[in-house]
Image 1 (tube, rainbow, N blue to C red):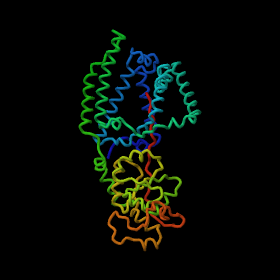
Image 2: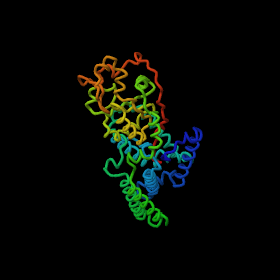
Image 3: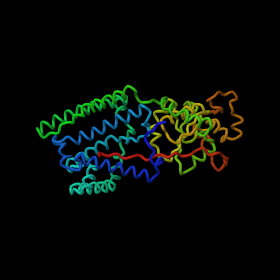
Image 4: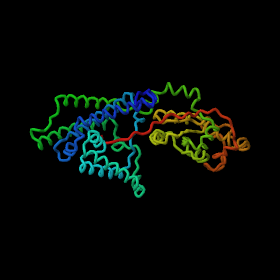
Length: 410
């Protein structure tokens, strides 16, 4: 069982969690102010290569955090899948970065540092924050005019390892080495522009850099856990749920979920394409077992009221898919009890069930004969819930899904 990310609301309650958030915010603000980030002249000086402390501080935070996060993930202490990564909208992101960069140069602040300046009573910080608020208002009033562009080039949770086709450990080590080389280059630039007044790295910087590289190398050697490793870590706890059949929902409960406006059902059909084409429940998405892991990120990003139901002809393939999704930390995943065969048995009608049964069907084979590939056009694919009032034991218990956190420049 992983230790992080922490569920602060579960551990401390709503008030306790807010107190922690407040303390983190105060500590962050104090750190920025002590680093001189409440002074617009210091912040703007980096663009003229006269004072590179902003670059050094921010990149130090990036490489330390990334190294420790992925090392903790490698050691099984943190579930990286539960960390919210902002989705990539490529071209809107590029334009937004340019707009923010120009604003940073002109105003001398980014949004986070402007709040530090505001808190210390600096007039330029106050003016900048007022400008930020006006910009937010203006954006909200005009975004409808360019909504198509604003939502364009969506790439989901897209990261550098996916772009480069290498492991997370290799990317972390590469970024650490690159950052340290850039720190050395930044000091050379400062020395050439400021001479004797240029700040020099403290004595502990070199051994600290060595430790950071060593941790990044360890992270690279260990590697990130794969789906099998993740399942092994939770197998004992989750197998109990399988043995108790706590995650197998009956056809009657699934039909209830499909007609519950408060829930968003996502039906995953892992059967062979031939069986899926012959018959499938209305709205079910065909997703072979080989593609289940790749779909996990998409399922994690679904709204908090999403219930994912996996199904196969019987239960074995669906159970395997359930294990994969649970190992990837997808919340609210359940299995259709008895599979599609049980659904057909329940809703296809006595005549169809009697006359079209295949007597010697094997495990994970469709148990009924269809004369054509009806897909979801068979009446049993979308039964009338009022025509089948079947009592059932409710198995679905919605898990708490934490809202995504927002990012910032500091």
